[in-house]
Image (cartoon, rainbow, N blue to C red; front, side):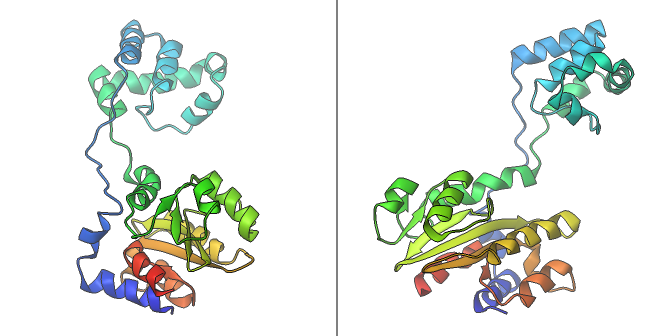
Length: 259
């Protein structure tokens, strides 16, 4: 097991790990979605008129459809299917009418699931200069040899790494830094629970470690969450069996300064 993985495990099991991690991932599940009142007025009109096809169309214009149904994503992708499949639309609308308009609105306003909030939070934390290094755009980063962290979108980071260190994987770059001339690239994951999807998330991150790179560069995985709970779970086994740079975001600053 890598030193930084062990240090992350110790932090998670001996200190105020969750309190500190909230600075990186300030999840706010209590915040409801704001509805466009003009769009909602159309929903109410169609609901009261029992206009099934129009009701589904108006609800698809909102961020969140109020009932979980495996056919709804198809309708989002191909709205023309609404007219061609009246029985499916009637079935979905039957559930909506049973709920009532108040409950439909309540469900449309439901907060985003926390796993959908996580993506931008790590990057927002980096932008604050939390690691103690300048945060530069890809253009600025390329024009200097100084120590810095790159502020880039997924696409910008992947393109920069492809050109600079021949990183061939088209995804998996959440972090790029230059420290004492060495390029550090990594993927960040917040694993909130045990289970198949979370295991797949970690496997996806570990694929970053196995992607070839060239030049003076190093690959890391920045993992946080339940993977550091000492257990027989697959997540813990995976991180402890890897002799690679796998660490909490809370250890990242010390790691960079150690280079």
